[in-house]
Structures are given as structure tokens and as C-alpha cells.
Length: 322
Image 1 (cartoon, one colour):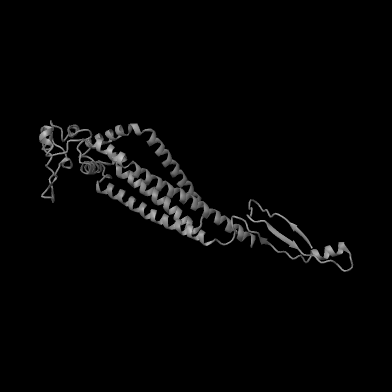
Image 2 (tube, rainbow, N blue to C red):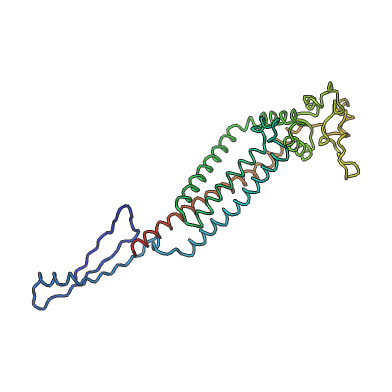
């Protein structure tokens, strides 16, 4: 019996298994080697078998591949819902503030709700691409999803590096942002909400001191309105009357008081110190959340790549058996 081992190559398809082909020949009783070889070559028995290697057979997927596939579908479906919710919130915020009105459309580019709308759109589009690509086993969609996710991971890593290198200037950026929010307190509902949440949560008032509110045209002591020389109610020690009703006038005239008298009415300390302390106290938690989010994205990349390899192996297997 003569046996031959050959490698199968066609185009750029390279099977992960070596095929073993056995050619069974019978000797002619007459002893004529040439005629025996010629006759037996017409009746070759071909037995193609895939030998086992570490990467597994290229045919039907294993149960682990199916688990990874539907895990990818489920996670992307959840992120799609999250993206749609974010998208709706951003759109609702813009409509609620009438940002599309003719007199406000010029400043829509600096509206924080526009950023939320954009993030929701990107998250929805990216998650839908991954979900549909995994469900339909579409290599084009999966490669697009994988490339976009890889780019997102790179951007996040670069952002962390930049934030770490600029950590000494974080306080300056926080001060600049806080002062800007204070100047536009009455004009921008989003900045007002953020400022009130910070001052209420950290029990503070202003950037460095409660007198910083004098830079606001409505709280300035030379302003003609009732809010002149006052501070927002979120600066008050007890902004609720009887624990139920929000007293919007509790900070009126607070800047005219000396610190001893004012401390029973409003918080005297600025918010920058409180924000810095909060960041220092929660650095580990922030880092843990960032690592988990980054890890989830990297794992998703590996699952997507595994699915792409499985789709390619399946196509090779069907091609070899067609």
C-alpha cells in the first residue's frame, strides 16, 4: 500500500488541519507493476480526515462559541437601550429648554445637552452595529464594530494619560468651570442644576468663598433686583421651610452679612476645596470603575475577534465539504 501526505491550498484559504489521504492499491497477480498501477489509479479510495490540533475543528461551533456569541448580543442590546435612553434625555433637554428657538439656536453649540445627545447617538449606533453583526454573523458589521471599539479604547487610554499628566492643573480647570457656571447661573438651566447639586451635596457656596457670587450680574450688590447682594438658595444651610417647601429667598442679602452672622444662614466655604477632597477620597473608586469599564470593552474586543475567527472557520469547513 502506498500512502501520500499532501497539503491543501486554494486561494488564500488555509485550513487549520492537515489532511491525510490514503490511496489503496492492489497488486496485480501477473506481476506487471505498470499495468497494476494504471488500473488501480482509476479506483482510488480517498479518505480525508482532519487530525486534531489545539485550535479545534473548523466545522460547527462548540457550545462555548455560542455562549460567547449570545453574550455579545445581550451586552450590546443592553448598551443599545442605554444609548437610546441617553439620546432621548439629550433630545428632551434641548426641547424642554427651547434650544431650537430662533433666539437661542446660536448658542446651541455650547449646550451640555447637545453633548449628551451626541454620546447617546454614538453609543446607540455602535451597540446596534455589534448586536446586529453578532446576530447575523456579518463580518463587515463585526469588523466595523471591532474597529470603532478599538478606537474608543485608545481614546480613553489617551484621555487617562492626559488627565494624569495634568493632575496638577485640575483645580484650575475646576475653578474656571465653576466661575463660568456661576456667571451663567440664571441663563442656563443645565449649569444652574449642576451648580445647585454641587453646592447642596458638598455644603458649599461659590468657588473659593460665598462672595464669589458677586460676579453674577443678578447677585452683584449693585444690581437693581431683589437678588442683589444675595446667593442662590442652594447655598443656604436650611433651604427648606418646615422640611417641605423650598425657600428661594433664603440667601437674599447674605453678602451684606459678616462671616459670623452669615454662617448661620449660608455655607461660607467654597466648593473647590470640597471637590478636591471628594476626588482625593474617591480616587480609588474612580480608578476601579475606569478599569472595569476598560476591561469590559477589551473583553468585548476579544469576543468579537473570536466570533470572527469562528465565522471564518465555518466558511472554510463548508467550502471543504461542498
